[in-house]
Image 1: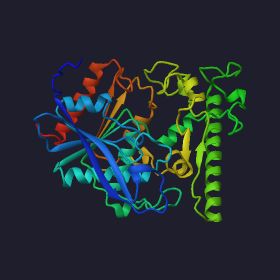
Image 2 (image 1 turned 60 degrees about the vertical axis):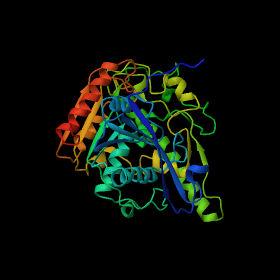
Image 3 (image 1 turned 30 degrees about the vertical axis):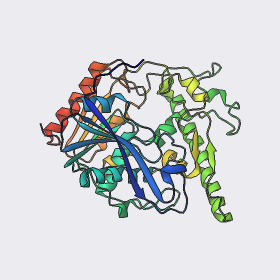
Length: 395
C-alpha cells in the first residue's frame, strides 16, 4: 500500500552536462567518458517558488553530496545549491585532480552562461575544500599544463571561470597530505601486509610506544610514513617509465596499497588536539579501517597516485592555492571534526591571499553534524550571513 506524501519544499533537479575531451589514454570506462565525450551528473537543489541570482556550488573529488546535511540545510534555508558530480563519481581509483578541475569549470560556466546566475560561490566541504582552492587559484592565475605524470591537462588554455567567493568548511589541506600522515609505516612488504615492524605498528599491543606519544616517537613515526609514501611513488614512476619505454598499448596499471589508515591522531587525541572523541576516524574504528579493504589510496592507478596521493607530485595543496586567490574566503572549522586535521583550517586561513578572509569555529560540531541539528543550523546561518555581508546574496 502506498501513502500520499506532502510535497517537499525543495525541488531537486537532475543535471546532465557534457563536454568533449581528446585524450590518448582513457582512464574511465562506460558512458561517463566514452567516445571523446565526458558526461557529468549533478543535482540542483532549489526552494520551490524562490528564484535566486546566486548559486552555491559544491563538488567533492570522489563522491556525491546531495544526500549530505550541508547542501540540504542550505537549500532549506533558501539557497540554490548545485551538488556537482565529476567524471569519477564514487570511484577515485583513476581520479586525476586536474581533470576534476576541468569538470568543475564546465558546471560554473554553464551556471553563468546558460542558467544566468550572476554570483557563484564555491563551498568546499571536506575533500572539496582543497579542490575549491585549487580551482580558484587556476582560474585566477593558471599555471598547470600537464598532470604530474606528464599527460596533457592544460588549465591555462581551459580558461576556468572564476567564482565570486569561497567557503572552506570542515576541510583538509590535501588528499596527498592526508595520506602522508595516515599511511601505516610499519608495513615491510607491500605484497604481504602481515609483515610489519612492531615498533611502528600503533595497533599492535606489543609496540612499546603508547599514547600519549613522545615527541621523539612522533618525529620517528612521521619520517617513516613519508619514507613509505615516497617508496611507493618511486615504484609508480619506475613502472610508468617502463611502460613508456616498451611502447605498445599497455599504458597503465592498477595499484593496491595496504594499511593506509594509521594516523597517530586516531589513537592519541593529544596530537593535533580538538574536541573529537579518541579512537575514531572518518571510517569508524581506525584499526579495522587500516586493515580492511577501504581506506585512503587503497586502490589507485599509477597516474592517479601521482595526481592525487603523492605529496611531492600532486598539484593540489590547499595552503599553496589559498595564497594565490583574491576573492572573499570564509574558513569554517568544526571543533569536534573527526575527519579533517584540526590544524589544517588555521593553516589555510593564515596562508590565504584574500584581503577579505574570516575564520569561524563551531564549537562541538562533528564532521557530518550527526545528531547536531542546532550546530548544522549555526553553520547554515554563518554561511547566509557571510554571503549577505559580502553582497554575494540578495535578500
